[in-house]
Length: 383
Ligand code: NAD
Ligand code: GLY
Image (cartoon, rainbow, N blue to C red; front, side):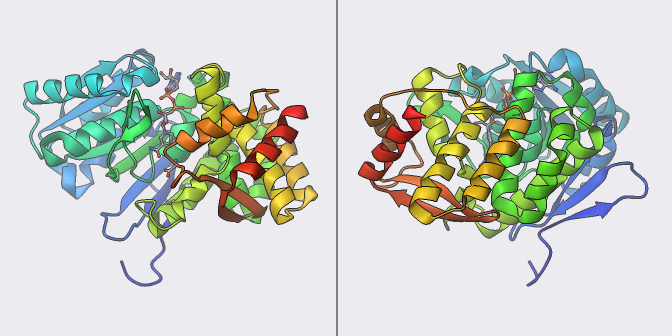
């Protein structure tokens, strides 16, 4: 990449009523993210314009059992209109499908369908489909192209961009995976109309997370628009997705493989969130609800340990409340929470790591000692 080259920028596209973002990550092929109502119906046209897949003999659409009846026909029709031979695999909806058995079934199906290295995969669905389809694509025949078509808010603002793919093991989530940047991301905001409220809020938590660690401009814009965001206002949602994509692309460009202590900022709120999800049983609280709780907890720690202002803490609390991400009232034994945190894959050398907010758009990655975590959890559980 040239020095000073823009990582991600919003480009007005006169021929399309959509927002287009060009993502340029060093040593990777640049790719576009298109965000807008109905862009799903132009999926095939845009795939045709991507040199690496223009001539692809076949596109395999991977989706889940909830998304299939809603959007599979539209995706396939668009690909067929553009001249692609198209087939599909439908997995069961839910996190349980992100496993080696389902990955293996898909690899077998790919081989059975005669997919070759010049074919591509289309991941149509939320983060589960995106991570799994990205994983099978990046490993089948040592790697074929993948186009991400996210249909949840979380997957539009986070998982479809940045190239992390993966499956879960019984020992933990996302323990096996690859880095594989997509060839194109097609975020059709009309698909969000069918998203259940719980999933909507999940995505809102990731938007709030990005805004808090990104900049004043994003954070205070979101605070102003929180009511419209909660009501799924089309223009506000489109802008929120675009802002998240630009922010995430910039972070990924600085630290593509999460080895430089930069990409870890995207884990803001996730240290406690992972413990809440694991200890209460996956699915009891949504991931987003747990992330929001984790953001509040990290903020409390930052106030005490780093002097982060009460004003920022109160404003973040207001933002989360307005997005419908209220305090959970979750209680657990602090010693047990600490033990779960220590076993998380994000822990390093037995030390629990937190992303602590210093101010809007400023954060610090910190290994916090056990006594300080217990102390903070004690206070948290008493509130
Ligand atoms: P999900 O994929 O399970 O989708 C949530 C639910 O919504 C599912 O039941 C799904 O069938 C349904 N659904 C999807 N789109 C719909 C639509 N338009 N209308 C109605 N229902 C719809 O969950 P998610 O929250 O999108 O993603 C979570 C996954 O993403 C986790 O596995 C997580 O590990 C992963 N993730 C990955 C990254 C990354 O960088 N790769 C980042 C964050 C999260
Ligand atoms: N969602 C965290 C990451 O992509 O790094």
